[in-house]
Length: 413
Image (tube, rainbow, N blue to C red; front, side, top):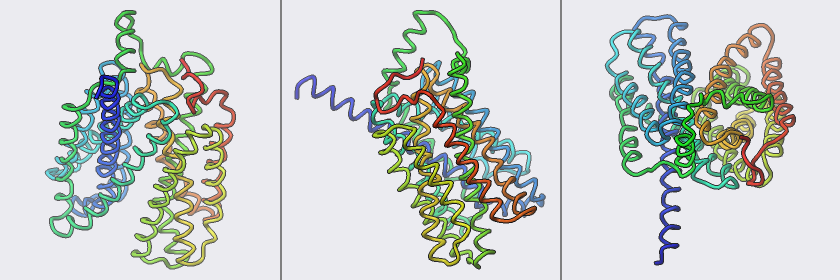
């Protein structure tokens, strides 16, 4: 094997390690965050707290994600993706494992905030690593695999909860949250920083200028509009996901008498639809660009969500769940590639974390809005609300002047 072939093999191996590490990182983060869904009732009962106090645990976690997204995003752009990536994994893994020993609600709030800080920081760093390790024309497909890792983590959480909680209680479930520490060890031992980051860091040292990376998200009116637009789109993406996954099972139980077991089957079918949608979306994004891919999926999401309220049997509910999941969450696969392509290397982690975690914080409020519409009006109004926000996101992507994907244009500087 000559030197060129060796370099090629090393580069290929490095890309595989980056992709696998990012997938595992997001998958373990997704597992960690979803644990709370399966133990919330047990925590409320054990500590004798109100439902509002229990719901605040999720709110505290989301606030932590926003804080971690900003802080770790800036740090990763300055001192290195891989190093900070391991810090975020250690933080959410150890915080999750310590939940097994929490003796009061104050400890639970603190630990969930810290787990959110770690999880929020991990997302953008993983996406930045993948965006820099692979050529621009493959970013959509590669970041789609990373988001699929998150869905697989949700499935692992569901299986683990079903097996562990009956045997050892809710605290035992959190003990396995320590597993991501082994991923952090592997990443630190086997991954080097990307060539893009090394070059950006070298240029920064030569220029001897310490720039606030958040300011690079607002360097001009065009960049400012792009940042705001992407934040709104991220908010819509998260709002649609949480709105559908939190409310549809209970809505369908009331509307057509769906049983709890049928609801679980619905959840699985919807997640399968999401994974298939992510795979296809990454392909479309790389081949046709963001305006076409998001335009198709946002339009289909708005239509399918609205039509879904007319499902009147278990079969149509399951099929509809696959279709809604396919479109509504399939496009989540593109945000890492989309955001990364608009910003320079020395602001890429910051951009991904600030934009998407702000979207998480805002979009995470959608269950409250849907609950209000259900209480004050009816299901049609609630689903019309979801359809409308997808159309708002559609208008935004169509008004963005420069969507530098498909490897045809340079990222905005």
